[in-house]
Length: 287
Image (cartoon, rainbow, N blue to C red; front, side, top):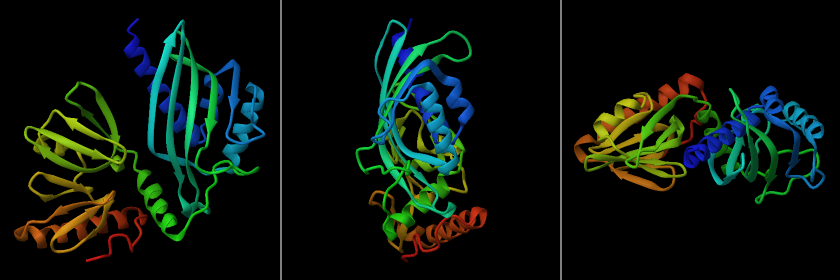
């Protein structure tokens, strides 16, 4: 058995599981649990739940919690032996405040998988979820207090992250990554390669920026200057001299392109707003 390949498959399985978990996919949750499954959830009264108790708890979560999207996540298989694989990780999830409430949190998790044969490669034997940032109270499954600024930020993130379009990118080392449109903040030329600056990581792609940029949707990405292509969803503010992006990134605008770039930003923002009305009007209002 190729252990490295097996570990990557386990990591992908856990990633899919967590996305389905917070999309309230009850059928999938119940399907992948082993008969001897044990869940240690985030709240104090959820220390050791057997399979039946876990199914009941998740049913309650599905009924009481809107869909949560994961905007930053990482998973790593730390051990694999004798048909058992251990995957640890973390993620930051948020919901769309337009659904009536605003909440989000970063959670850690440990998942123990058992190998299967057939269409389903693994079953989950143990799931341990913890919340190191906020304290869960009884009756709240994913709570956090929000200031006005945090509410505005989460509203933008959740709304735009509902865009499910994905882009496959191959790194220099050979690994292939699947990115959502919102994952990518901007592209930057690096000689014959391209640096892809994402929310949680930076990738170095094998392709040049001209060829690679063709994979990215033209209604979201625009050229600020030669060798720099930005995602309109991450434009925080702009003026005649520069464009400022999520994470404090500032890209200078060449004088000769200033008017064209500003017109392009206005055009793409209108497309985003008219397409779903989800991008806050005040976001990026600075001129």
